Length: 353
Image (cartoon, rainbow, N blue to C red; front, side):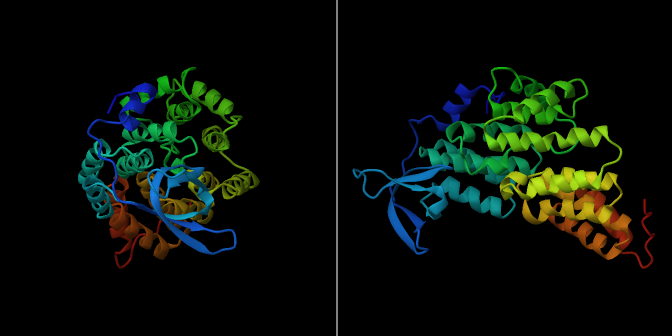
């Protein structure tokens, strides 16, 4: 993988160039379509492309292309390469390193753009599983370059915490917010630089510009990213402001809400309204688990919030959830320590703020 995801020409060639060793799919694809009256009908043919806007397919190789809105598509079934199939199974089993290797091989043996985007999305998920945001960005940007309206947009690797980025991510993020960068690259770069002391002012200015972008997805994500500056700049929140953030998030498609609930949880936490904070934090592990690293932290924060609120049973249950579901993350060991304390016959009561 090239070092800098913003070098679009190189990335696009690597991700979507027709490779001489690529193997085309021979078997027919199967598409299940929703008709206006409510009935469904299956079609078999050859999917030319499947984007966030529509699916285009031919019933026979020499037939005219038929197009159907993505909203009418219920299911698409296709034949994958052996590497792709193995990668999917390994990922489902939690064998992420092996899955990532199989997906890399699958990308070298696949020439269908829409399946290549699916493989890249799987690579993003592998990276997010381990908190590897740098490589998540490297795999995500080519997806949007190939399909600006992609339905994989919910995987966009943004920072929703105040944690600083890795050195590589920090270095490249400065280039991503440059004047020649795409709005998506500027959004990602500003998101990560917002937690860097000597770059946060420029990052905030970038996000404010992006909050007026014509692309509604980038506009809304930039607006929610700016909530993080309110967290740093205010020691006390008006509850109506936080409620407004919740309403803002609820009006978005589920896949775009992403880590906004983590910021909302932090805002309630600053107000010492820990039960409301726990509910916000829990939205991620319960509904949006694509960013597994952030979901594990949100689950830990929810457990800690319930403990402070006096709900020891709820806290115990959530700490155990972190241990068994996210034990390999940095919050797994912290959760295990807290869980062991709460399981004692007479656990020390967590001090309420």
